[in-house]
Length: 355
Image (cartoon, rainbow, N blue to C red):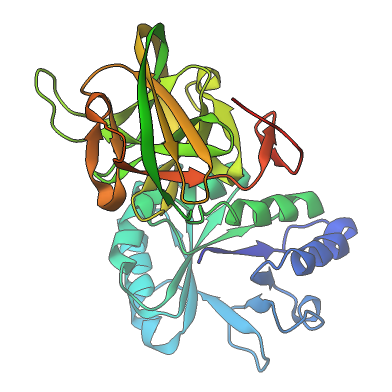
């Protein structure tokens, strides 16, 4: 689980109490200071981190600046300023061996951080990266897909602390998928469909959840699997008609017509695991359309309108790939039932009937 420490050393004294209160309230993992008195009254749920040149007799986690590799055996936690090849190697050695390694990078490139993350992979300790702001924190937490275990940020005020806490909560929880049984496939004639091209590769059992009704979605397959007459496009989902809902992060939906470069969608696999993906392009074109009507074991009707072509695919139980033009009544698909209705994409407990 990712975590954050906040650094009090540069927080203005006028804001310090509010920042500490925000850290406690939002369950920030640790507070860093160079004055032990600022840490003494923190609750036991927060790690008290003291920056010091030499160890002190206190219950604080003491971080010492590490300058030479021969000091590693005398430390459990260290701070390394990475500015060249020597200090990069020092940071890697520390991350491999110490309980906590805090690293700061002089240059804006993330290549040195990638090298430290790779060196520390599988090590029992935790890597904490110093970040300048919330934007950099979001990047650092995802570098090499693994990211730094934690970030250390000096907030300007209490609002920065709350925003940092929310950033750590953006891990994508799993969804409970259901098995839908196809009832009918209807050919509709011409309509506008949207292909969603993401900035990431889909895995073979992944797609996105799309539906005509906000109450239910079908797992639409990516073009990861080979197709005749055309190359695979493992970043693409031929997703459905422009009016359709697509499920995104934080249980929010968008119409397919609303997606733009930079929008977010959820990749969902056959077991319900999810991850947030960035849309690189949404491509709308007129094509013949068909409607799949299916029903859940709870008797909820789920509808999906997609391009009427054999190469458009949806996923069934176990990640089985199904061509939409070959679907028959009784076939099984993977889907998701939303527990709430929607208003401007947000879940809300109100009466709503869609047909």
